[in-house]
Image (spheres, helix red, strand yellow):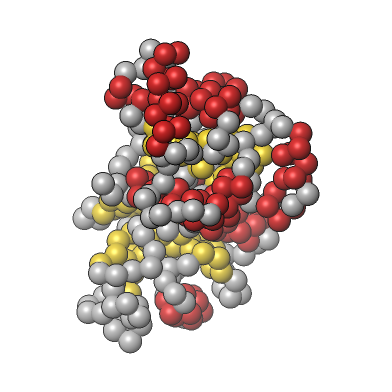
Length: 325
């Protein structure tokens, strides 16, 4: 859902530029089963426009009603939805029985608020790491935070801190049948998909599918060339899925010099072992560094078809991203 959060900020900026008041919501905590995790965004206008989500729809409908009732006129406040005591009655409950606490920021259409959302947007795109501090009842402030924090949202007695940084990127080194399905699954998960491809026939095939092109950022260069020049941050998963050692080996070599949280290459156990042997010969990387490569790639679910293999790959990326051993 990370791309959705970018869309939330983009629409909110547009609404402010149109002279509309905007209510920006951030999920700050959840208890029990809840559909959105801390940090998730939602925005709405008094005209009934909204983008993003807080739940499956029950909270959003009630929230829009309360905007018209002038329930959220403070610069910032925290409201609770769910069973038990909270700001709103138990009748406004999550179907799953959980509880959600939401930070609500009231933004009027002034240049200061537009610049504030633009700064949040640039942080989520990866231009910088922002440390957002909200003292309840007051306006938020954004500060430069050079070090990413493991905890995205932290609640204190009378203020909240939120870390805003780049969303998960899936880097795909050249197109293959499996890679095409990886694009679809990664996009559905809200990940940014960056594809490096310099082969003319594959580029022609990509350009012939405008619906696919809308889901990716295409860089027309050899994968390792891009990685050597630009690197990859700790929110990036690097995949090489061509079965061509001229591409896969060089991509893996370049990937190991980045901060990527996931590195993987496709191939059987034998082919993966052969690749590791080649990398040992041509690099100075330690065994611990080489072990960063997931190969054979993906969860072991007996995948056979390109779609099944892609499903296993994205499931493994999500597993690692979420810290599941």
